[in-house]
Image 1: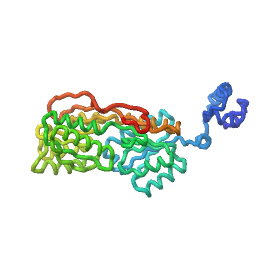
Image 2 (image 1 turned 30 degrees about the vertical axis):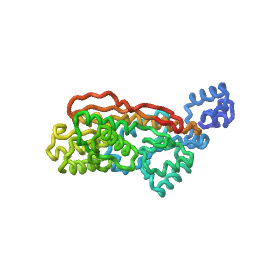
Image 3 (image 1 turned 90 degrees about the vertical axis):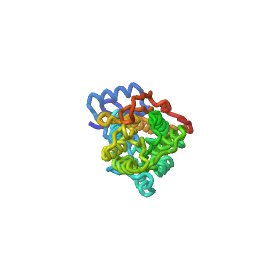
Length: 356
């Protein structure tokens, strides 16, 4: 069964059947209904390649992860976020292609643009980690190619989904301060990642507002091993911190491992704060106090916003900021409770230049 066969049974031209298959508005309701009924009765399935040529869409979107494969497997954020993206793709009848490329190296970006954008292999792209010096975003904007970042664009020039990392980190630090801790160290994520910089800024905001000197700040990456090494250095020093705020849960687990290796009690000798909070099993096994962000919902929403940009090429940038909450475990001491983070807020479809 092909288009010609459907056309003969419906008493219309082949081009009319093609328009019905591709949801072209230039078909009357009566003809559309007749053709659709015959398609259903014959169980006809349009050729995917032919549909792509007619609609100029592949129905394939990309998810770019600028980290290495080893980092993806070490950081539980990615599987949860990817599952959310896959959920949205299944609901929208889209295929998802996973890409692992640098988005800051011009030569790599050139190859990516040729392979995915100009060859029309992809309809749009989600970039999973917003980087401070991202060459790809500028190129995609110049190509007028639909894309959404997971991570806030400080200029609000491109579409993104995020949480308010700075406000969340500030309130997490305030939680430690309210427990009476004064020597609070911070183990940061990679300084090229926008979210990592925002979390560092939130920590510094809270320390400054409380009139406290900023504690040791250790540069790092969002992985357990690097955090373990940094924590061992901090905890073995002469001015041992009373608390450590790690910029991700994977890093917080590294801190807990270091404390255990040194025979320190948590929270008796050391308080530990994490950031992510999307693995319930992890949280329960370590009873970690952490900022919880909706990783799965973020992945889903990024695909939904990308679909809106693909469907409406003239659409301006879309922005959405999800709320985050402080998940209370047993690694900070006491039983001080806190409501969902007050400064985190949800906004949708902001106009270009608006502030979330």
